[in-house]
Image (cartoon, rainbow, N blue to C red; front, side, top):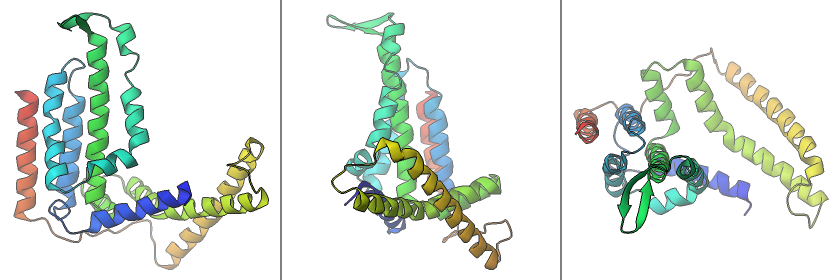
Length: 255
C-alpha cells in the first residue's frame, strides 16, 4: 500500500474513532472545544523555566488518554513527524542561555536546557490535546462548536470543505502517481525534472474538481451558509465536565 493510500486509510479511521460510542465521544462538542482551547492557553502561559508547573498540566492528558480509551501508541504513530518538529524547536536554546540553574551531581543544568525542554513539552501538550479532540469529535461537530463561538462562517466553511474533500485530492494525486509509475517502471518516486509539471497538472485538476463540487452545491441550494446541527443537545453532565476541568486546570496553573 502506498503512502497516499495509508493517509486515506488513516483519515477514515479517524472518522470512525470519532463516531464510535464512548464516554468522551458522548460529550457535547462545545464544552470539549472550549476546554481544549483553555488548556492550550494555560499551557502556553507558563514561563520558559517553569518546567515543574508545566509537568502538572499533563494530568489533563493522562486522564483523557486513560478514561477516553485513546491509544497513545497511535498518537505517536500518526503525529511522529509533528512531534519530532516541536521537540526540535528549542534545540538551540542551550547554546544561547548558558546560565547554570542548578546541578545534578556533577552535571550543570543550564537555563537553556530547561527552556528547551519546556518549549518541547508545550508543543507535545498542544499536539496531544488537539489529537484527543479530533479522535473523539467529528469535524462536523467541531465546526458546529466553532459556529456557536461566532467564528466567521467563511473559516468554518473552508475548514469543513477542506477536510471533507482532502480525500478526493489524495485520490487524484494517487491516480496521477499511478499513471506516472506506469510510464516510468522501476523508478522510485518522481524525477525532479517533472516536479513542476506534476504540481501544475495537480493544480489544474484540483481547480476543475473544485468547480464541479461548487456547481453541485449551487444545484442543491447552497446560498453561502453551511448549516450544521449537533447530534445531541448539551446536557447537565456536559456543563459539569466543562466546569470541573476548568476548575482543575485553573487550580494547577495558579497554585
